[in-house]
Length: 363
Image (cartoon, rainbow, N blue to C red; front, top):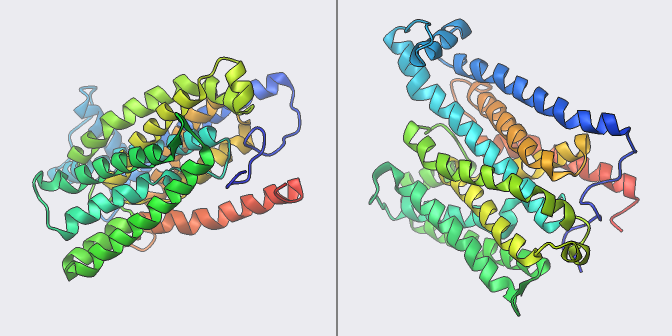
């Protein structure tokens, strides 16, 4: 039984390519993604209501690093270092975390249509944040919403995993169904908080649910940085075991993979990455769903490239989306989660249609 359509390798069939070409593709994609980030970061830093030339951006960074350069006027320095750079770094961390979490999720479930929200981490984090806003909690100052969102996301995932275990094992189908039920319950709790909250809290909750990086600060960057670094550092260590798991549970066990332990560890890593990201940015969908799928289409299902590649592409996509969100309707700002959904859902629908045509159905 399967809730989500599955193929043996978790991807659609590809034409055989020469070995040398297959080896070059990941390196070329990695170089391309890094180059795109190097170009986009200064563009994002210079763009906004107060434009700062790229040359001045580079000079300011060099000055701060003690590599020469010049210090800009007070307004330009404040705009760059108190507004734009925290937002850029947060976009990179959140995008990398969501992209890598999506690749892990799809590897654990052996299916390219899985995404972190399935196991309830996003909705659980939303309940924590909404509760903090609606109840006016302020025990940790500006960090209160982020802390409660992070803790609630982790607790939700642990609850889902505990409820889906039976006889010392966890069935993927049961885990997904439990996650769907918990998501529905979390949605009901959010609805109750919205019903009893005052108008100011409702506006804040709605904006948080739509996703945004407009409140980015260095403290928020520092809050998500340890979780992102830990999760992104641990994930590639399991690349080989995920490749073996793609062969099926029984072959993976015969090849020495402790499937149950692997799932427990990776679900916790997924929860860590996603809860940390959601706690500072609100709910941002489709990054963890589409990004790994794109890389599989380009370079195949091997996780040695897919995991770090998804982190790079996720960072690039979210930075580009955030730049678009704050400039396309200037001086207003589009909610980031709305923009990613508007662009991601039609694109993913096209991917589904393309996959279905190639397979002649979901058989």
